[in-house]
Image (cartoon, rainbow, N blue to C red; front, side):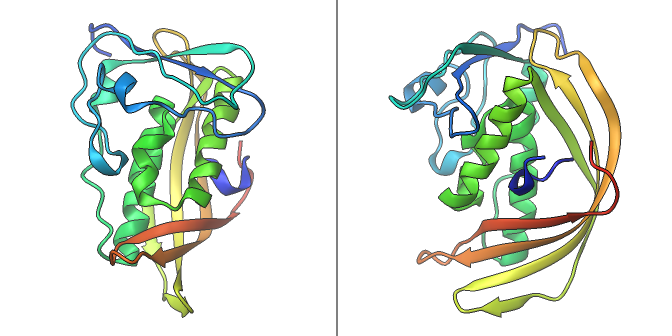
Amino acid sequence: MVRTTEYPRNGRRPIVWTSRFAGRLILLSVACAALLAVSGCSAGGQAGSTGSGTATATTGAHMAGPAADVYVSQAAIDAKPKPIDLKTSEAAVRSYLDWTTYAYRIGQSQFAASAMSSYEEVHVDSYIQYNIEKSRLLDQALTSIKFGKQSAEGTKTLVPTTEEWKYSYLSTASGNKLIDGPFTAAYDTTYTVVKLESGDWVVDSVEAKPKGTIK
């Protein structure tokens, strides 16, 4: 797994996302109306139920560059994590990891947006676009996580973890053929988590120190 802050099938018809990209900007901005055709549009950026077919994502006026079709199997779309839980700082980190993992796999950052600040969403979306430029999707899984002692800094809380991951890169073409991997990775990570006026916690930034080489 490559930390975003550091940039590093069944027989059903696949979903096709169409996006435009230019560098590592926020480039998968999708209108709710477009998403209704494939996954519904639920509050907080979580995915609803998705039918088979295709969807064309819309992009903002600042978007530029060639269009890129990203094929996603129905099975991947249906493999949604459990609902986002932002009641505690630790729960927010767990939900952030679950839903960014899902976002990387389907190439759509907005489904994880409610687990993070807009600042961190830029990094998540940028990493997704970076992979799309390379015609690939990240398929990762958290295999181990241990939480350390948290510390408060004003309105922010630092949440340290030790993590182990396995990950592979899949093609964005139909069938999502394996491009590279599987690999393993380990990190000492610190999440900066902030509490909103609503009382919910969200991840605001991530600092990860890899143990060994990350591919």
